[in-house]
Length: 140
Image (cartoon, one colour):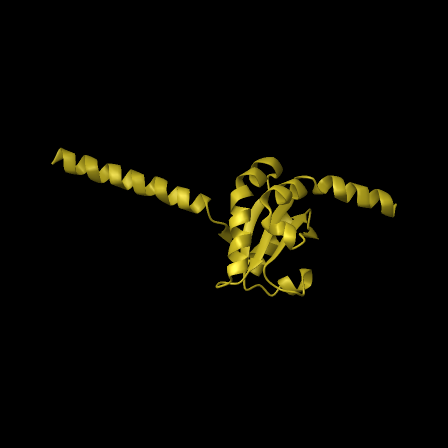
């Protein structure tokens, strides 16, 4: 009897750990309104605009999922997925998949070929502050 309870408790604990692991390997899905709220309230938001049954979108998501923890740790960024968004047309008329980084609400469109290259993507997203400062210096 004790063994059965112990086994059930162990299985329950294991399922909880497995659920946490699966959640950490997927991107949080948000609506358009939730994305706008995040952009207003957070300094760094990385948003992947996708469609549900899109193979190309899945490649983007896999790449972004691989570097998600580094973005969260280094930039304190929110990394989210927006499916079937109406906002995507504002940032990229070519539609999904589109990867956009919002820094203090200012969008930075990630070029398509680089969005599936995890090394380039992490370098680009971590160093966008330098790029934005250079652009401001040129404008001023």
